[in-house]
Length: 160
Length: 160
Figure 1 (cartoon, rainbow over the protein chains, first blue to last red):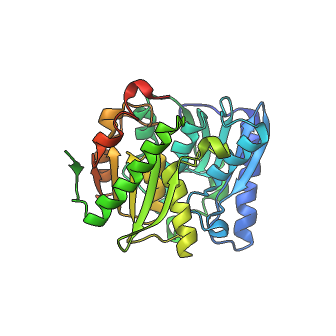
Figure 2 (cartoon, chains in turn orange, blue; figure 1 turned 30 degrees about the horizontal axis):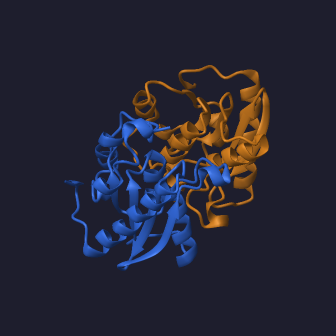
Figure 3 (tube, one colour; figure 1 turned 90 degrees about the horizontal axis):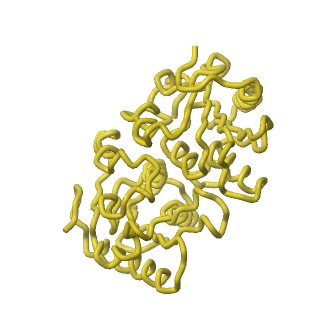
């Protein structure tokens, strides 16, 4: 059961399978902070990433931000118009804002805020619907795609 | 005339002078994207930065995010509890969220959203008061300190 303003394409569904596989692999390895993301453009994954906060000591290195930086480097432009952000968990406020700065207007995620609890968000009383409204619907989104595959990773009891 | 929930200390006022001087210097040099920031801890500036988006091609490298990364590197911990974020312009939604991930709960800025226009924000219908409320007031803020020193830099006509 998905929510949002868009219906994922086949390429986006395939990319989500890759992203959720990545998260499940890291979780199975016992990794501590397990978030993964990818950038799709023209039907292909052009960048993949995982959360690198612990590796870098930089709190801004969420999987989505790293994926966008990699896509930017790969394309040679920081204008990612036409690209799609795929994430294993609903992007936090920072990632959502970074997405907008990168001119990405389409985002698809698996685990949804209402099911993960608030630990992965810093302004938890704002929902993605609030952010959508606050920019006059400048992006489309879909939450809950393949959520069942990663729900065990982001269950509220595991937050920390 | 300042707004917000805190009254700046002398050390914070001194740091703002440094940050706004930095912005004015860059602007006088004809730089294109002129935003500056600093991190204060125990009354001293421990990190200073300017926007590095154009230099790095990474849209997340706003002055505030770079300043926090530098402070994290300087202190050897990504927990910046007790530090203060000083910025020449009101932090955008990305920077505000990054601040919260860094556990900074005190932010002071010069130019205010209501005076700069919306070009520097990606969810312009949300104000800092909305973000403050959305985390149950988990941070204190002051906007407008030394705003007159940088108002010419961030005037709506100059946005882009």
